[in-house]
Image (tube, rainbow, N blue to C red; front, top):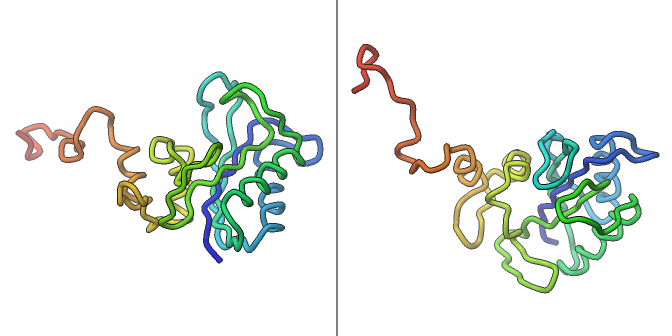
Length: 175
């Protein structure tokens, strides 16, 4: 059994599960039907990326999975369809989005499946919940932990890490 990190997101209401946070909670129950859900982050509310117009509910779960990653991807897509997800505009509004983020140190590139997720380190809506579920997980390509990736995402853009600190006026010990 491997621990697989799965991202969950929703920004559309569902007739049975209600608002996006309710959709994410219901999706966690469906995910538990695939294997043991060991840990779950809180649900975060985030702004949309791209043409989507509604705020998202996002979470990350650590799932114990005994099958292959392509089999898990098929199972996740089945859950999305069961929730009414239809393929449409990239980054558009959606009832449910389930993505495989990582599987330990596994690196895999297949049509339609890349592990670790290729944009994981760029997305706060993934990193904020990920760091709560698996703070010590290490990206198999960069070697950075989830904590380090999160800290990098929080750092002001365009500044190297050593320069990302406030400047104090001379009266308070600054230059």
